[in-house]
Image 1 (cartoon, rainbow, N blue to C red):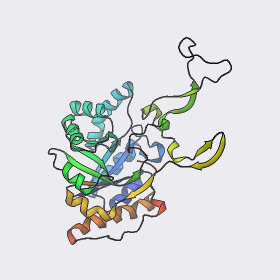
Image 2 (cartoon, rainbow, N blue to C red; image 1 turned 30 degrees about the vertical axis):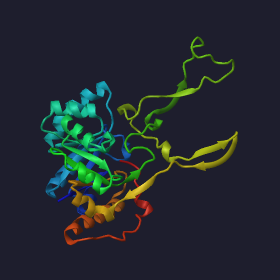
Image 3 (cartoon, helix red, strand yellow; image 1 turned 45 degrees about the vertical axis):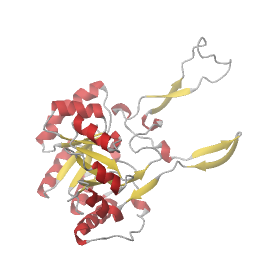
Image 4 (cartoon, helix red, strand yellow; image 1 turned 180 degrees about the vertical axis):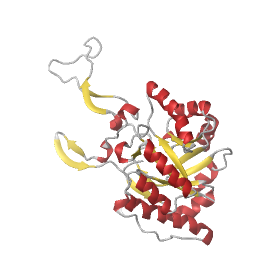
Length: 309
């Protein structure tokens, strides 16, 4: 039977998710997550939330969705024992290099290859399993029949993100400069290789690199309006394509296709919005044993729009 994994961005949200019926909850830890203050817990809050989860008979997971710099990586490895000491043994990772390093150093850890690892095929999942992943997260854009084929891969659990934002590019693989410092510097100019006309602007470039710990805050430029010009004349202001994906009506199909875990996105949601969302999917999952449910599920309220992982 599939289980339900819910997000939480605060201790209060952890309690809301547990009370609403989540089998497990994933959180961000301060300094390990690109969610910033919007969705991170301190070490004290993490320990307190873990105690709450244990009392409820549930599990707490930690999401590591930055890509640490070399000096940050060593500090991360030094902190893993403290994580294990409080009873948290599941880490969600979006960098395969970190995943492999953690597997070699801490064989007792349960490592989940996050949706940012980009797995969408049988070969992808088998590769991540061989690298050391215990579980892999797939996007809800995959159909149940595609999931059924992937679920035949042995030795790894399959999770599917059924509530998420469908980005205009592959989720978790942003190629826009969303994660870099907005402190542009002049492009280098070498007249011997790149002639620059006198008085011309050499251009600006961003500094930093995507998803690094030091530049881990996403500025969400994909969610800001962009001006459309034609021949120097302003024509329109538009947003990049993106829509809320909520597949509560398809929970029975995904569960029967072999999904081990149904995952929800949204660590940014406050407790009062997170609770009904978790309850919606809890009811849908409980209804699998009772037969078809939610066949005419209405669109999710705008307030449930996910703005952060």
